[in-house]
Amino acid sequence: MRRTARNLRYHELVGLEVSVKSHTDASMISVSGLVIGESKNMLEVLSGGRVLKIPKIGGLFTFKLDDGTNVIVCGDDIVGRPEDRLKRVAGG
Image (cartoon, rainbow, N blue to C red):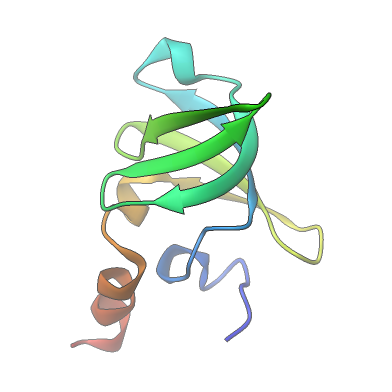
């Protein structure tokens, strides 16, 4: 399944460019880079040669899709592993 603005919350985020628009942790604001890992509560972002762990909760993120579209996603909406997020939408 292709990543789109409509299904991004339920999709794998690894491999996408991300920037932090706002966050409850002010030190995370304006961080940007490539998502290289994801856990239930964190995004691992390669930024400036360093791997940063950014909490999903409390953040507002902009993800750049493969077609160049920018999608703004509330971090609270992407809490959970990708397979668990898919189960929420599938009703399983």
